[in-house]
Length: 521
Image (cartoon, rainbow, N blue to C red; front, top):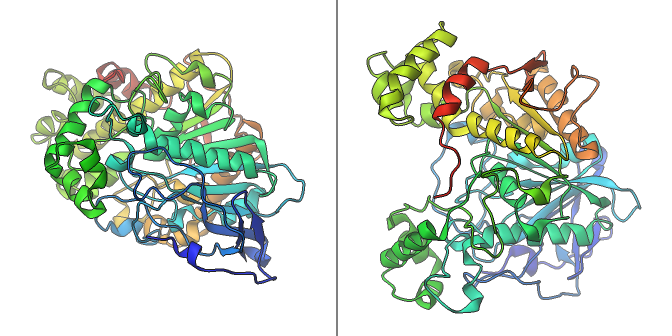
């Protein structure tokens, strides 16, 4: 499949033109007073069709200007169900293995200004998602902070993270276990090489992402090939990549995928039609969802944040945090019975999160530190700590202990009114405020109000400040010290933001010792 942008030539003089190293592209002007130059579907690497499991290479050059007004193809992935709270963000594109495209929002082109560049890595784990979501539209953020915003697509799931070194001696498959992350590195190289052209500063690049995007940020902080391509990092609600897969686990998963695909060689798996490959993933033991980077000794030589923070990113400041009730999204909307648990039902539910022998200790401890909680609130908070807050704290602890650049911690407590208010401060809610996109996020944040605009003001400006200086402090926020284990100061974002020392201390002391240590698999 050919990307639509490759089929449309354009030379309209009123539209902005970006001269890439592969050829010119023509975009649009958007935002208030059309102040932002926008280029969508810009190719940063050649198609991977016919080259499955191989490293991405440079695009074939072109000479006539190509239209860059439409997003590129989504990378192949399993179908994702409709989630009503995300309906205002939905913007699906055709799926194809020709999917290595990025999108740029900038107020200036080759104007000599050194704007901070903010490169967003989408969520969806290492399995689903794309950079085309309306929630990630960068126009307002670029205009607000005079920054350059970049979003991108990269290979996912078995297309991007199938470890094949134990199944084939062919060197072209040697990096198959980390291709998705290597795609991101290639996109960051494009950003470096085109920084002047897009009005940005190649020496001031921030990578930021939410959920799986934050996991990708964490992984890149440990990749030698990404060294020097970014200078600040933000991990939002996704510090789960403290460790990657080991070859010991990744090889059987690849074998199981081949078994599901009914093939006996890597070459046959590489030649399988895209839809058949997706079906094989869905029928495999992983159900198309159990993928992450592999510590292969090549592109990833160590676990990202286990047993400590990676030395190669010692001088990269980190902003890390979560939302207060993350799991009310996945553990609530996905299982609505969890909103009305009884105390009798709670032990079996918690047995899915902690060792059965520890369940009563957790219940007793949570009732002590949160005497006003009902059984459902205990479940959701333990699940939130287990899946998000605990690993974010561990990442902050290890980064701050490494010396070097500073670490800052946040928690977002603003509550959304959608779903009758039962979600409170759920997973991914902060994205609307970070991108200043509340008008595009009404299915999740509710109608645009003074309150939602205020949350966008304080959070977007903090993210911009961090991208500009490595410090998220703004005049609208109270004093925000760096994070360390002696004070554990955390910026709590709500209508009245507060810098709080160890805001969930009782919960943390109870649950952190029960959290798996991010050990390798």
